[in-house]
Length: 303
Length: 311
Image (cartoon, rainbow over all chains, first blue to last red; front, side, top):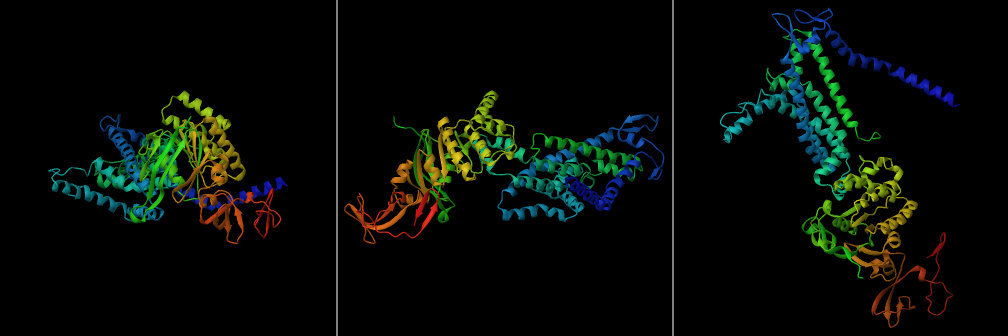
């Protein structure tokens, strides 16, 4: 009896697989196909006017860290590249930290409103998504440029005599990315805080915890899944950001995204661009691994 | 020796809302709770008993009046600086901590040495008979077990007063009976003053040393279960505690004449219109015409296992 039922279940499992096969094939091709192309390109030689030549070469990968000296053809460490990587990681980490610092109180505020008001606040948070990213970034530019809103205000109130150079600096990129990615931090944090049982706060105070201890020992550990989700949602796109550093950082303050674009256009070095893309992917995967490890440590495996 | 007072509420008023629309949850409540006693605040929901408990815990500040602990004014002290712990109705256990970590939480917050935290946690686990579940998450426990963790967690820092906010209301009848006995045992073993809030009069009568009956934000009567039951101060107390028959009548010398004309012999010092409260178990059914009997008709019999209710 049991064996027959088992066989029937197995047969229906197999049918399930067969039915989902077309979707799986499509998913595999759409998700992995372009990645595989990029991976192959990273091991080829650059063509003279862009494109690639079908010649196996590790120069693309080597080019990530080293550049060939024009005169004696020796490999030297490309510190300009390292600066770009470092800036990308540093700006992304800072963006995550800033969005958390602003997003946590915001999410807490929304989650503690009466239910009828919450929808309105969440709605307000999502309004920036209605406008194109490029337009929002130019709007930020309008605010912080030398003749922009902020500097005009500072000069008018007499706080400074000359405009402060914000635009085309790392600070400008940071402001822009923090603004753009803030909703991505607020929403998962809100979801986590919304589930948080506020009565636990009283239990904490009752058991001699100070306000700081309640935050550190009770609130943060319990809403940690939301913090991790928000950080991933902010950190990953920050690392690959293209529009914001392009518009607010000018030509000099490149991030990895701009550097990759450069290889496919003026640089005419598609293999290097492909290798850089793969490396970005690896950095993201590594960062995710660290995050998830840290998140799982000490939390309930049973949910 | 005169029993010493632990918690003393003096003319406590708590109003919610502002101006004319404000509601007085507590209206001039004064009560002294003695050291080491099991004191129960009893009343229907919305009578202000939980509000009084929250004021003692420090979660809310009174609008007027003061609260003393061992003679010292603690009215403005935040909850984390009062040697008073609470067992919450919802238990409010920390879901990210194990049973043992929950129990040790208060001690760790007080920065007690690690060895002491460990020893006390183990003692508490044994006290509430949860030794084998020390490493479990609280979400893996049954309601009764969670209840014990909440108790152990509140008892671990050895508070001067333990506040219990309807802690048994979420348990089924059988478990509730067990926990009533368990609570009484814990109270006697630890010698800590328990202030217990409930709307269940039976729970109050079986466990308490003294009961404070509340309604409409006021303390109606404070006394031992026997006093409350046998000599209720007013109609509310008589009606809320146990089953009671109310009979309207007129007081005369040595007796009360009921509206139907029957005379009930009673010692009293009242005159005019009175209400007679008679406990059903004090009624004896006798043949009509016997001395002192009131004529009555049996309308229905309800079978109740060991007893029968005559209506």
